[in-house]
Length: 173
Image (cartoon, rainbow, N blue to C red):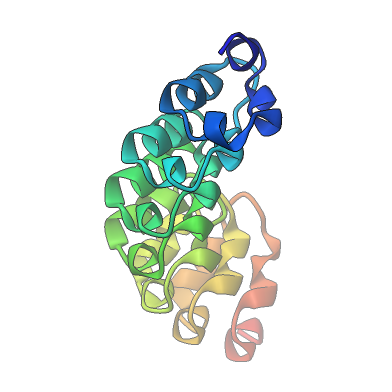
């Protein structure tokens, strides 16, 4: 307990029994220095909602170490993408198709590439993705890459080289 409280990564060297001790794992998660210790917890605790929520609240990237079941938990995934939108890549396919989650994610990262095909064809989602990077046009559907309004919106963003991802027809416009 003292070791993980002082240095959360000490959990990596702990026995299987201690990696399955919720109190010890929680102490490692709350350690101020180490943010990515969920990977050392037992499979059982990587499927414990309280443990995973604590871990993704501290460092959203911990979502990648959670169980498949919890990667499909909307509350957990929302917490992870609020932390950093790029964590959408670790969400279940179902939640990559959840517009509410994807809208939060695209406003907080370069994540349009991790959204479902359906949402990469949603003009609202694609336009919101330009808040961070116009180049996200490359992950939009072919239909939207041929939409003049969408392409112009991507160009006036922080990066003006997104025109390279427009349809050939609009490149010649």
